[in-house]
Length: 225
Image 1 (cartoon, rainbow, N blue to C red):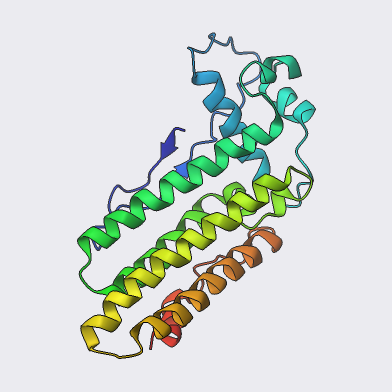
Image 2 (cartoon, rainbow, N blue to C red):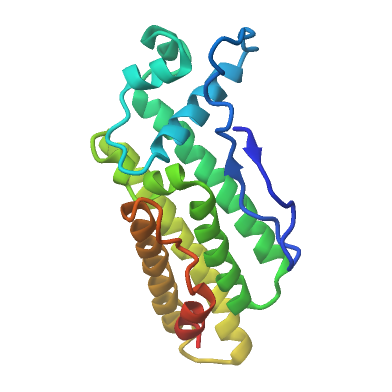
């Protein structure tokens, strides 16, 4: 999926989380439209779906509304996706690929386990903040009326996040010589994951008025003290 980036690297040299480019999700009225190249329509459908999920207070997005936004028939949507659930799977795949590729970069570049965990959580919350529609998918609000397997897949995503945090914190525990490194790492990773989910839920349910990165440094200092 095409993304936009305000900056390629942040001040610490870490790649910033991508944002879906939904700016061109629908053509301007009265302008002629070129026929999309193979694969472009699929990306356009996902970008438009993500854009519709960003609307504060939006209810369930129907294929009829999605088709209308794109100016195509519902049948045209199903030429690219077998079902609406498959469209959401496309969004989830984008979330997974974007997050874990950047999380792996952090693990490779940052020697401190604690700093790895801090940067991974920060990147996760920045990703949700920059992609409000994706944040609704991540916390399940956009999946309430969809297939159960989508909710399960997002649950597995956060299980993987927690596992990555455990690994980073075990590195920190081993470096400090703590005999309770594994127990401590598991507990703190669980708290960080629950904290992240809670921040994303608050963001989505406040109609995106409460940013998930609000007072983030202070909160992480308390958790990782």
